[in-house]
Length: 128
Image (cartoon, rainbow, N blue to C red; front, top):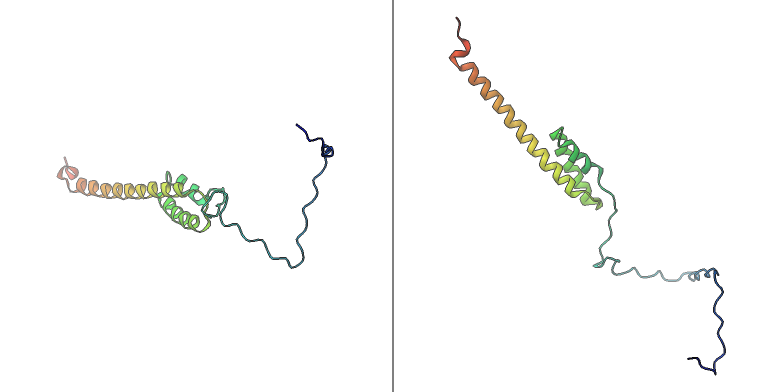
């Protein structure tokens, strides 16, 4: 229903550009910062990239355990400071790296124990 007492309103023409926003006045006070971000609770949104050392830590855990442990600790420190992604990768690299180090130490100890036992075995030095 339309009101016959009002003047007719013409619709705006299509594809007209919107006018630019008005510039703030000189010496105008700065706008107040937003209290909360779009995700709520006022938390800053971290960058959306993974820490490179965390990825390197996980990959080197399968080849060089000591390098995985070193890069994993450095990656965790950087992630804490920068807020990058990859904390789980760094922790996985650390766990696998430490397991590899422990396994290597056990293998070396077993090698020496078996070697010493073989040398002390009388059948090892028997002459015919």
